[in-house]
Image 1 (spheres, rainbow, N blue to C red):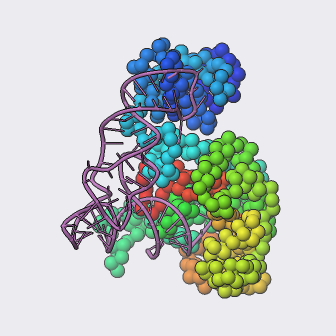
Image 2: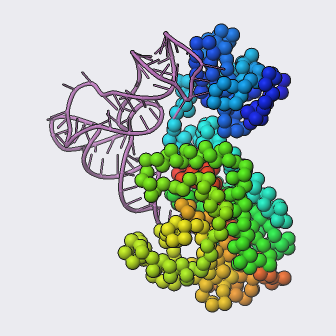
Image 3: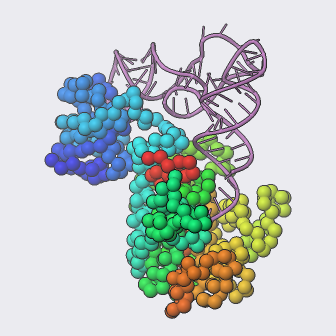
Length: 478
RNA sequence: UCCCUAGUAGCUCAGUUGGUUAGAGCGGCGGACUGUUAAUCCGUAGGUCGUAGGUUCAAGUCCUACCUGGGGAGCCA
């Protein structure tokens, strides 16, 4: 007999039919005549209630059916008299894999997220983490669906790179050299010509530069790959290894770029609402439960309400200069409540400033554009004013910057001058400059931190809980 | 990396200004009861109090260092 999955069984009304199901035991409740087994196979949040007759199966078998054990059941699907629509009256039960109840760390009770992080290999078996895993999958799919529908091509940019000019942060080195005894050159430095690639190599911090090469031929491309930053960041919104989506579009100016970013985010959130509502409801309840001890004003907006709000309302768009003006005239600035003073043009906005704009002033997502050139990357297009660049940051409540992007500098001379000023090695970047030498066109793109999106969509507070196995400083378990 | 904070049973936590044999709930185990819903009730086992020093007649409690977790900041997605 073919195994059926619980997702389908729970929707079935084929009462009286005999079916086979396999999964992991969540809880077992013992009764005089029958045992109730809540079985979950991960295909859906809800469990299937299996009813096992005590006399028919005997205590020896039933004793092995503990929380965490894997079982296969053949039985008759019936209408349930309890809270659930259907249940399975067991005819045969096979214990596929036992789980010693004395040692199995997951109990039928609430666990802290910190504890579950330590047993990340088992946390998929909880409601919370299976829900996150399913939502995450849906979002991966929705990303590809969105771009495919809009005529974008997915490009696999390299994971190992020899370029250290991406400028997006500290890099992890990739080498096959013997670290204890590396080959040295005449000056006594490590001789990278003996390394695997014949030069020094690192893990990528961004696929953008390669993405631009593809966009300037295919018109619209996107990347969706792993990204590595060796920054010593210890926060709830940073990972050393994360997944980033980077679309790049030829003939797009900053406005086109903003339109795409906003449409993209709304599409993803709407997709989650349309396809993951059971998991989202669970995550919402979980969040409310967790925050019920917090004072009213510190509680989050209800998750589904929040997602709908973002999906249905336009983002605020304003320039960096306008933002500085708002901040300088804000209540916290006048009362001296900002830890960092907003000194005017040139001030790099701090988290507290971004949060004020998004959470207090506008109370909706904000796209900030036209930042001072000196606080942004070399490849961003210089505006006609000469002092700002066509950059854009999409700021979300709680998580801050979810997207960073810009129109790229397509003018060869302007770009080269900027690279010189910012000490970007021109020779190494010659391939990049070729795009500006031959058939250069205005183009734009942005990067979306995938885990930051998942943090927002699931309402989780820590980015380490929305990636299966988080890599952070001093932590590379599993 | 900096600031703050925590580390007591498998988990979540309590432990009074330092003072006898360190407690609870949940979970486990045993039993009772029962078409149950993280079932309920009774009983029971289970602890190098993060690690190493120090102060003291006496340290879970005070001091120092280190380790680990959490929150915030910086860097950014």
